[in-house]
Amino acid sequence: MDVVVVLLAAQPVLDVDAHVEPVEVLLDVEDGEGKSNTWVFETAAPNGLRRAGFSQKGVFKVGESYTFVGYQARDGSRMAFLESLTGPDGKTVKIWFGDPNAN
Image (cartoon, rainbow, N blue to C red; front, side, top):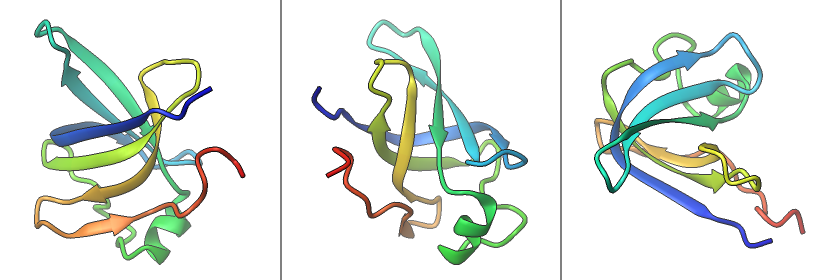
């Protein structure tokens, strides 16, 4: 199965669940027909985000816009694993350096 790369540019964060591993970030994204769909981006555990340069509090701020790049779940659902993100300040952080094909 082909790996689908998802790029969601400048999407406001709807919610963040940092009490689970991996951390989940929820976004509402409009499709081509103007319908809003919720996407879930999974990322590293909280300690992994700290190692990537995020502080313990305020990793993501609800309502602020971020650009997300990730790999969509193989079942085609609106879930993806975060590879990198660009924050409101323009700083890009690469979270994952793995191979999406598991090679």
